[in-house]
Image 1 (cartoon, one colour):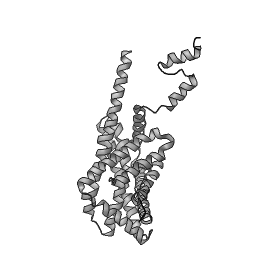
Image 2 (cartoon, rainbow, N blue to C red):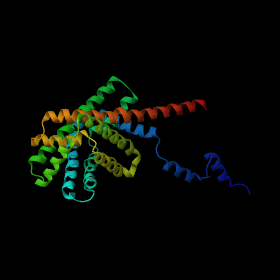
Image 3 (cartoon, helix red, strand yellow):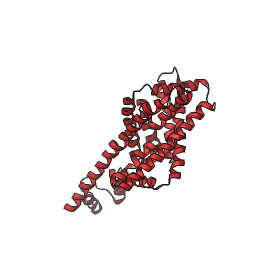
Image 4 (spheres, rainbow, N blue to C red):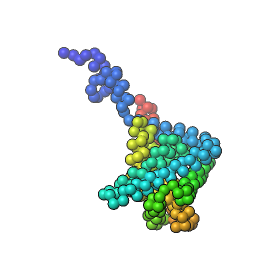
Length: 293
């Protein structure tokens, strides 16, 4: 017996593989993960929107983000205090680290380490002095706002009697542990953190209903690896500065500048550049195939 005409037609349309109905072929198309060029274009367009925002909008959003990120430090310190002595206490306390990221990203507040990926793709796609100027303006405003928010949160945490003495000790221990890194370690661990944040940004457009899981998993890995993040780490070190346990020079030279450089290298110069190169290569290959048809 011969094949059913519809099955034969489906086989011819699909090439190799099983014969599918039109509805089933639609299901296959919907279930396929988006191509890298789709992810790239989604993030690039979001970056264009961010570059076009006013200074005041960027400033208020980034200030709010800096203050919100302080809750990553606070949640971790609270878990550290209550999990002391328990098996796997470090694994438990690290679960507090993703909290600030969850709020900032889902609330679409401006976070500097997100912009090392999002805002740099428009410049890589269409290099030019105007785009570079817009990028530097965005980075400058967002970084200043984030760090201002971090400073406000750290000062308030120290002076407003929000937590008890045991939690204050946990907060101080977090900053002390961070400052045990050398500047070179701050830089190299910052590369890892910047790379992971850029990876998270790349994954989010494809995650759809799994965005919370992506944010939690990626930032939890940053906490487990004790990688350095310029915003969360600033809350921890500035808390020590306001408490008199560290100086402004310590904050700038031993932590902030090396970590900032590492985050930018990991997020922009490595991950974003490689991802952009991958998409350009795929696009050129597709173009070549079209011409040859």
